[in-house]
Figure 1 (cartoon, rainbow, N blue to C red):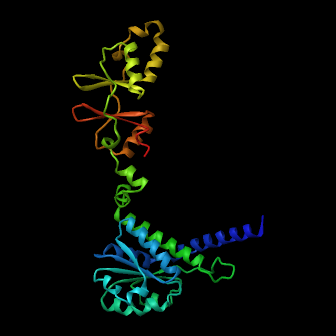
Figure 2 (figure 1 turned 90 degrees about the vertical axis):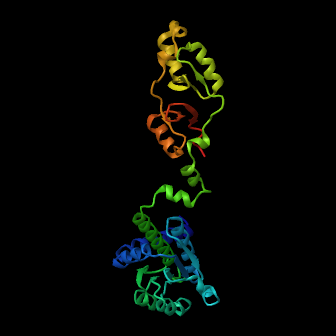
Figure 3 (figure 1 turned 180 degrees about the horizontal axis):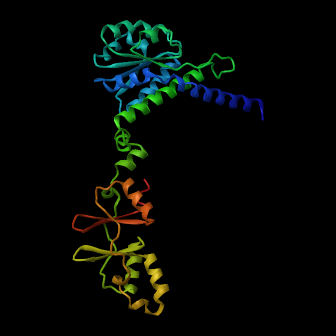
Length: 316
């Protein structure tokens, strides 16, 4: 093991220990913080300087994407016109490792005078920020992972993780669901999967529709043309059953010489798996996986065939 590898491993261990060291700091003030944010009628404004500012921007982004309207503001900009974005009804999350950052403390009186709750996050419970905050989140670490114990490393990791812990607690409190997450991420892969429905991906042209009375020999030809590995048996435009290429193979093995005498009605599945056009792709995937099948039929309330969704269609 090289010297640099040892240094990297020690850094990761130090930061992991720092995170575990936060657990005893999760106290009544954490619950109070969650309550304050849940009762907030406006926005959660996150602020911090330097590395704490970078961490604050990420925390604000995480909170916004998980149901808590929030944004980041640089405290240096507050004194040049941006103070107006903070309004009664808002809550401020101020992040400072020392808790003594001058740029933060300078506009703390304005917030308190206007009865705007301040949540302080620092590594110093005795700091001015901690003492004057409505609630304080203790992000203290024993030392930085930096070999010189100078560069913000363990402290920034701790603040980031504490922000994630706050976001997770708020998600639980709001009963935030995957479908809610998708609403905030419509352009991402997850959002597409959660928002896409059967009607968006189903095949509805040239469907392999046959009669239950059709001989299997002829049904094989229709199945080959359909290129879905199945045929849908219908009577008077209503689904009666389904046969797959697997059903055909088993019929050939079991019947042998009598195969061409059999009809679709003899081997078809009479209760194929069906979904409505508004069924979500994620729900269809569960059906496919649970029943170990490759396709589902899309039907209306009267069992009219609207389309077919296969496993390839669900791969967005």
